[in-house]
Amino acid sequence: MKENIEDYRKNGQINLDEYFRNNPSSFTYPYYIDGYDELNFWAQVGKGNKEKYIYIKPRDNYDENPNYNIYAELVYEELIKQVGIKSASLDLGKYNGMDATFSDNILDDYDKDIFLINGSELVEGKRYLSGTESSLDDLFDAIEDYCRAEYLERNVQNDCIEDIEKICIADIYTLSTNRRVTDYDFLAGKDKYGNEIFKVAPNCHNTYPLGSNSSLDDMYDMLENEDMLADRVNTFYTDSGVPENKRNIDYPYWEDTLYYIIEENPYMLNFARNCAKKMDIAKAIYNVEEKIKSRIPIEYKEFMYEVFNNRLQNICECIDIDYYELIDQKEIEREEI
Image (cartoon, rainbow, N blue to C red; front, side, top):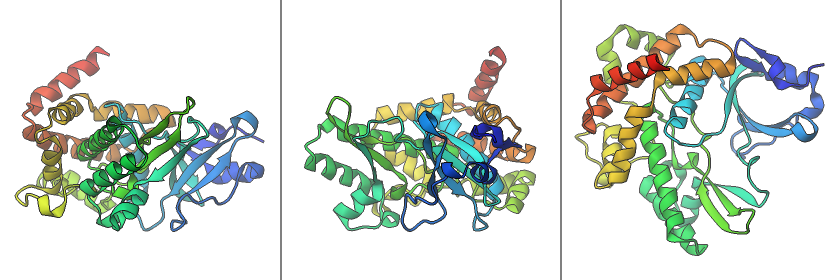
């Protein structure tokens, strides 16, 4: 009997069904992280000092394109790591016959006195709004209220807000369209020195990046029609964005959110420019294929290249970067490696 979960990898995916069937004592079913969401849950794997919990997210038929979605989520993780944003470590699986992703428990590397607070708890407790109704400003106000109530230093609040703004910018680059207030988690409690902490947790809600909310037919249509692809890419936006009363309707939603974050903020403008320079879709895809020990289907890779580079070109126009010079420089850097 194989106890190492890696031994159950086939065609890039860990067969969780087979692993749990052969190691029934390793499976605690189910422990839901969200009471209302019975699709995503924690499960225990491993034994002894190798025991840990993983968070499993099966892709049911409600997803437009579940098979592409799982690869896009892993490539998203690699892209945000390139610009210094922390993420839960994701992998591919099969669960109940469905494509799935799973990640390590982000609390495993932290002290036992640290716990998770979801963004919805902050906003709904302070503003009487639901997570789906809330904007970035609502979340920022709720963070300010929390830090004031817990007597935390001003820099704690500022660091949290900056980290969220960085995630928003990274989401704009990666066309991540499902980032509501409920998709931000925070680490709170006391560190090993007894100091109170409050900071943004590693990213673990990355469900629809790189156009993965498109159907397979739409994906093929966009690959065959550049005008259609360019038009569709402009409509991919991030859910957590500009408050309605502060929107500029002359801009696409993603562009309006980008301007809102970098306007009169040289630090965030510099971060946006660094994203353009450091995010490399080719490197991200390569790292994912090395991790899963398998190749991403060629049509998926082609689509990732097209949608990412189209959005990159649009952003370069917003922040005064020569897109073609940037692409040439990235190709030179790849050749030198």
